[in-house]
Image 1 (cartoon, rainbow, N blue to C red):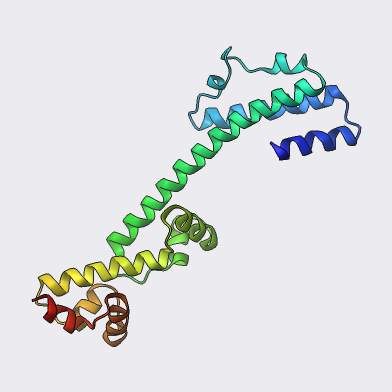
Image 2 (cartoon, rainbow, N blue to C red):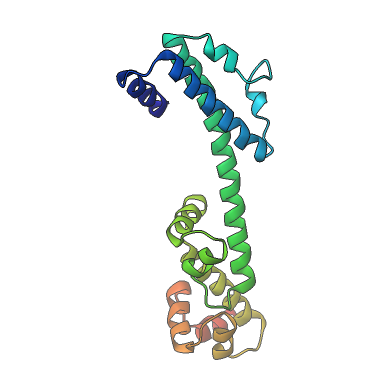
Length: 193
Protein backbone atom coordinates (compact mmCIF):
# COMPACT_ATOMS: atom_id res chain seq x y z
CA UNK A 1 0.00 0.00 0.00
CA UNK A 2 2.78 2.41 0.89
CA UNK A 3 4.51 1.65 -2.40
CA UNK A 4 1.34 2.30 -4.38
CA UNK A 5 0.68 5.55 -2.52
CA UNK A 6 4.26 6.68 -3.15
CA UNK A 7 3.97 5.74 -6.82
CA UNK A 8 0.73 7.67 -7.34
CA UNK A 9 2.12 10.64 -5.40
CA UNK A 10 5.26 10.68 -7.54
CA UNK A 11 3.09 10.60 -10.68
CA UNK A 12 1.12 13.58 -9.39
CA UNK A 13 4.30 15.45 -8.49
CA UNK A 14 5.72 14.72 -11.94
CA UNK A 15 2.65 16.40 -13.40
CA UNK A 16 1.00 13.29 -14.82
CA UNK A 17 -2.54 14.00 -15.86
CA UNK A 18 -5.47 12.20 -14.28
CA UNK A 19 -6.10 10.59 -17.66
CA UNK A 20 -2.55 9.19 -17.82
CA UNK A 21 -2.86 7.95 -14.24
CA UNK A 22 -6.11 6.17 -15.13
CA UNK A 23 -4.55 4.61 -18.22
CA UNK A 24 -1.55 3.37 -16.24
CA UNK A 25 -3.79 1.91 -13.52
CA UNK A 26 -5.94 0.09 -16.07
CA UNK A 27 -2.75 -1.22 -17.74
CA UNK A 28 -1.50 -2.57 -14.39
CA UNK A 29 -4.83 -4.28 -13.81
CA UNK A 30 -4.79 -5.92 -17.25
CA UNK A 31 -1.20 -7.09 -16.79
CA UNK A 32 -2.04 -8.65 -13.44
CA UNK A 33 -5.15 -10.25 -14.96
CA UNK A 34 -3.00 -11.87 -17.66
CA UNK A 35 -0.53 -13.22 -15.07
CA UNK A 36 -3.36 -14.56 -12.95
CA UNK A 37 -4.99 -16.24 -15.95
CA UNK A 38 -1.69 -17.87 -16.98
CA UNK A 39 -1.41 -19.25 -13.45
CA UNK A 40 -4.98 -20.55 -13.52
CA UNK A 41 -6.17 -18.07 -10.89
CA UNK A 42 -9.62 -16.52 -10.82
CA UNK A 43 -8.62 -12.87 -11.04
CA UNK A 44 -12.18 -11.76 -11.76
CA UNK A 45 -13.24 -13.33 -8.49
CA UNK A 46 -11.64 -10.35 -6.78
CA UNK A 47 -14.48 -8.17 -8.08
CA UNK A 48 -18.12 -8.31 -7.12
CA UNK A 49 -19.23 -7.77 -10.72
CA UNK A 50 -16.82 -10.50 -11.96
CA UNK A 51 -15.68 -7.99 -14.61
CA UNK A 52 -12.48 -6.00 -14.84
CA UNK A 53 -13.08 -2.64 -13.14
CA UNK A 54 -11.51 -0.52 -15.88
CA UNK A 55 -14.72 1.43 -16.54
CA UNK A 56 -15.12 2.12 -12.83
CA UNK A 57 -11.53 3.34 -12.55
CA UNK A 58 -11.89 5.69 -15.50
CA UNK A 59 -14.83 7.36 -13.71
CA UNK A 60 -13.09 7.80 -10.33
CA UNK A 61 -11.10 10.87 -9.41
CA UNK A 62 -8.91 12.14 -6.57
CA UNK A 63 -8.82 10.36 -3.24
CA UNK A 64 -11.47 7.85 -4.36
CA UNK A 65 -9.10 6.66 -7.11
CA UNK A 66 -6.34 6.12 -4.59
CA UNK A 67 -8.63 4.16 -2.25
CA UNK A 68 -10.03 2.06 -5.10
CA UNK A 69 -6.54 1.19 -6.30
CA UNK A 70 -5.33 0.43 -2.80
CA UNK A 71 -8.21 -2.00 -2.31
CA UNK A 72 -7.64 -3.62 -5.69
CA UNK A 73 -3.90 -4.00 -5.32
CA UNK A 74 -4.15 -5.16 -1.72
CA UNK A 75 -6.40 -8.03 -2.83
CA UNK A 76 -4.16 -8.75 -5.81
CA UNK A 77 -1.00 -8.74 -3.67
CA UNK A 78 -2.63 -11.02 -1.11
CA UNK A 79 -3.29 -13.47 -3.93
CA UNK A 80 0.28 -13.17 -5.17
CA UNK A 81 1.66 -13.81 -1.66
CA UNK A 82 -0.46 -16.95 -1.36
CA UNK A 83 0.75 -18.08 -4.77
CA UNK A 84 4.39 -17.39 -3.90
CA UNK A 85 3.98 -19.13 -0.53
CA UNK A 86 2.59 -22.24 -2.17
CA UNK A 87 5.42 -22.29 -4.70
CA UNK A 88 8.00 -21.84 -1.95
CA UNK A 89 6.48 -24.66 0.10
CA UNK A 90 6.50 -26.92 -2.97
CA UNK A 91 10.16 -26.02 -3.54
CA UNK A 92 11.09 -26.84 0.06
CA UNK A 93 9.31 -30.20 -0.18
CA UNK A 94 11.17 -30.92 -3.42
CA UNK A 95 14.50 -30.11 -1.73
CA UNK A 96 13.70 -32.27 1.30
CA UNK A 97 12.78 -35.17 -0.97
CA UNK A 98 15.99 -34.70 -2.96
CA UNK A 99 18.04 -34.77 0.24
CA UNK A 100 16.20 -37.83 1.58
CA UNK A 101 16.86 -39.72 -1.65
CA UNK A 102 20.46 -38.59 -2.17
CA UNK A 103 21.92 -37.87 1.29
CA UNK A 104 24.80 -40.23 0.57
CA UNK A 105 25.96 -38.03 -2.33
CA UNK A 106 28.00 -34.83 -1.97
CA UNK A 107 25.19 -32.29 -1.50
CA UNK A 108 25.32 -28.57 -0.85
CA UNK A 109 22.99 -25.62 -1.21
CA UNK A 110 24.90 -24.62 -4.34
CA UNK A 111 24.60 -28.03 -6.01
CA UNK A 112 20.90 -28.28 -5.17
CA UNK A 113 20.26 -24.69 -6.34
CA UNK A 114 21.79 -25.54 -9.70
CA UNK A 115 19.37 -28.42 -10.12
CA UNK A 116 16.30 -26.29 -9.37
CA UNK A 117 17.54 -23.30 -11.40
CA UNK A 118 17.83 -20.84 -8.50
CA UNK A 119 20.70 -18.98 -6.94
CA UNK A 120 22.13 -20.63 -3.84
CA UNK A 121 21.48 -17.53 -1.72
CA UNK A 122 17.79 -17.39 -2.73
CA UNK A 123 17.36 -21.11 -2.10
CA UNK A 124 19.03 -20.83 1.32
CA UNK A 125 16.76 -17.92 2.29
CA UNK A 126 13.53 -19.64 1.17
CA UNK A 127 14.47 -22.91 2.87
CA UNK A 128 15.47 -21.22 6.14
CA UNK A 129 12.34 -19.03 6.19
CA UNK A 130 10.00 -21.98 5.78
CA UNK A 131 11.78 -24.65 7.83
CA UNK A 132 13.73 -22.69 10.43
CA UNK A 133 16.90 -24.58 9.54
CA UNK A 134 19.58 -24.23 6.90
CA UNK A 135 19.88 -26.65 4.01
CA UNK A 136 23.22 -27.81 5.37
CA UNK A 137 21.64 -28.49 8.78
CA UNK A 138 18.87 -30.49 7.09
CA UNK A 139 21.43 -32.53 5.14
CA UNK A 140 23.33 -33.16 8.37
CA UNK A 141 20.17 -34.15 10.27
CA UNK A 142 19.18 -36.55 7.48
CA UNK A 143 22.64 -38.14 7.40
CA UNK A 144 22.85 -38.45 11.18
CA UNK A 145 19.37 -39.95 11.40
CA UNK A 146 20.28 -42.57 8.81
CA UNK A 147 23.65 -43.23 10.51
CA UNK A 148 21.88 -43.71 13.85
CA UNK A 149 19.43 -46.12 12.21
CA UNK A 150 22.26 -48.13 10.65
CA UNK A 151 24.19 -48.23 13.93
CA UNK A 152 21.19 -49.56 15.81
CA UNK A 153 19.74 -51.93 13.23
CA UNK A 154 22.63 -53.27 11.18
CA UNK A 155 25.94 -54.98 11.71
CA UNK A 156 27.75 -52.54 9.43
CA UNK A 157 31.06 -51.24 10.70
CA UNK A 158 31.47 -47.52 11.45
CA UNK A 159 33.55 -46.83 8.32
CA UNK A 160 30.88 -48.58 6.19
CA UNK A 161 28.16 -46.49 7.78
CA UNK A 162 30.22 -43.35 7.20
CA UNK A 163 30.45 -44.19 3.49
CA UNK A 164 26.77 -45.13 3.34
CA UNK A 165 25.68 -41.71 4.62
CA UNK A 166 27.99 -39.60 2.47
CA UNK A 167 31.26 -39.32 4.39
CA UNK A 168 34.45 -40.47 2.67
CA UNK A 169 36.51 -39.91 5.81
CA UNK A 170 35.25 -42.12 8.65
CA UNK A 171 37.30 -40.17 11.24
CA UNK A 172 35.55 -36.96 10.25
CA UNK A 173 32.22 -38.83 10.32
CA UNK A 174 32.95 -39.94 13.90
CA UNK A 175 33.73 -36.35 14.94
CA UNK A 176 30.50 -35.08 13.35
CA UNK A 177 28.47 -37.93 14.87
CA UNK A 178 29.89 -37.28 18.35
CA UNK A 179 29.18 -33.57 18.07
CA UNK A 180 25.61 -34.31 16.93
CA UNK A 181 24.70 -37.09 19.41
CA UNK A 182 27.20 -36.49 22.22
CA UNK A 183 28.85 -39.89 21.79
CA UNK A 184 31.16 -41.53 19.28
CA UNK A 185 29.38 -43.98 16.93
CA UNK A 186 30.80 -47.09 18.60
CA UNK A 187 29.85 -45.87 22.09
CA UNK A 188 26.38 -44.97 20.88
CA UNK A 189 25.89 -48.46 19.46
CA UNK A 190 27.20 -50.17 22.63
CA UNK A 191 25.02 -48.05 24.95
CA UNK A 192 21.92 -48.78 22.88
CA UNK A 193 22.40 -52.54 23.14
